Amino acid sequence: WTPDGTAVLFRSMRDADGIRSEGRLYTVAAKGGLPKALPMPTSGAEIVELILLGLGSGLIGGLVGLGGSIIIIPVLTLLLDNDQHLSQATAMIVNVFVAVPALVQHHRAGAVRWAVTARMVPAGLVLVGGGVLLSNQLDSHVLVRLFGAFLIYVVVTETAKLGGRRHRYTDKD
Image (cartoon, rainbow, N blue to C red; front, side):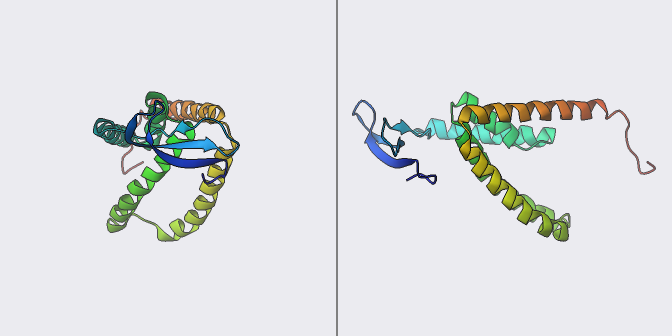
């Protein structure tokens, strides 16, 4: 069963034409219907492509001062034809693997304010959980539009910040 209980998850060693394959994951609605293949890499080339997309997204996000998720979610959704929910879930999982080493590095550099962190983490976990529950109630097309509106907001605010950075700050400021 899927976590929301609306579908059954299964693996088939045959594709839609009945030809034996390396095995794909499918879901079928609990109420019945045709199975839908989960968008998962099926070849070494696809895995290399995903690794390169992840590295490129992280690099671009880091260079421009935005999170890599701002880049990787549209890439997974638009270029690889993934469902928006799956793209966002993938980005959140990747963020854990990025955040842990970043936390270690910042801690070693003395750049973590633990008192502030201790107050922020519980609220962040509750809000992330709430956001996931809310997004699971939304149709993927609605979620795509909401994320698109968020991206427009990010572009507008970041562009405005760039336009306002004409003064170079010094220690005297």
